[in-house]
Length: 433
Ligand code: 0X9
Ligand code: ZN
Image 1: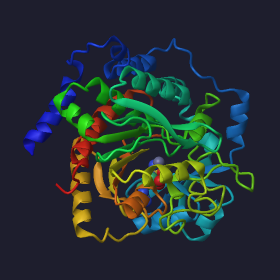
Image 2 (image 1 turned 180 degrees about the vertical axis):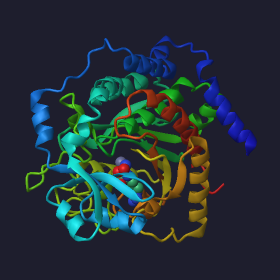
Image 3 (image 1 turned 135 degrees about the vertical axis):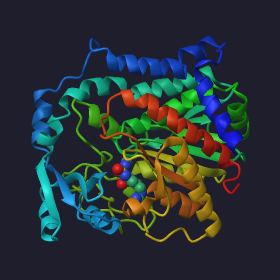
Image 4 (image 1 turned 60 degrees about the horizontal axis):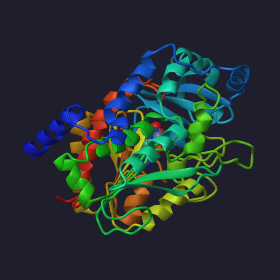
């Protein structure tokens, strides 16, 4: 086992040393893109998004408050989610996050102690100086598509690009497929692995990690270990699952702290939480049925085109064995159940989940735990994928101390998570081994 780990580490370390013959591929190289990201971050002369008056007004009239509430266990955290709070940070004795002005009195009435509250505008102002650099460094929807599309055309032997469906605003949800024998939507009997990012709009780092993982795999397609996985597996990478939300979040040059998709709800509020919309104990725990809440579960399971597209994509591919869903932030490696405090009943599966989460925890430095130890939340991708399709599905909460941590975090987050993702590929043919 030590040897396997060592060879994984060596394969990452040799990243910069590998020779690249193909000019087209060179222009897309993993090394180049990381270097570019860093220089975009460090070069203040690059055009920076400006906050305009309209955005300022919009944030000022945003109904959400930023609050810190004294709670110390998972059951209390779950209750807060159900009362409409969007928990963004978990500390030992309190949590912090957003709640609409309308829902705040419910929390106060339920005898929770609200330690701090301010308008989202007041709170967001403190990050103002970080926005331009962070914004220019991350890939928006078009840049993500362009990059995927260039990767596909420079690697026709192994890669193909197609859309798994349209979002509510009509954008394509792109998936890069890596398979040496089947392209596009053609069936494959090879064991399948899915890497998906950006269910939540403002979690932009969760787009970068799978996007750059795709670049890494193709950059290293001659590396014997990577070659083995590319030849024997069916790999799907969907970096930006919620492009409407991600674009809305950055559209004005001032982040909006937007989490959900862009569904126009009947009461005028925007968005359904896509990670509460899957058909697994739907809307029971850690979700809100209030449309304005950031954890709004929607009008029914799979009410949203994005989650329905994922359902159809997964159910049409019985060969899929593993899945990694990237979120930010919290440095955690989570496994089902998330919608129940019980452990998964099948002992063999449970042991496999724990073992893989521990290993990916070691490789990233993230904390492996059952999802509901964070808080119980129904309707997430991973519970559904495991319950309905037997897929070994994990949620990675990437590192950082904000949704907008700037570009300097990309390199370290990507490199660590490549280690874990390559390990997950190594387990995809047989997750029990
Ligand atoms: O609440 C979520 O959907 C995820 N956290 S995030 O801050 N990225 O929004 C955690 C999902 C883990 N799953 C469950 N606890 N069910
Ligand atoms: Zn998330």
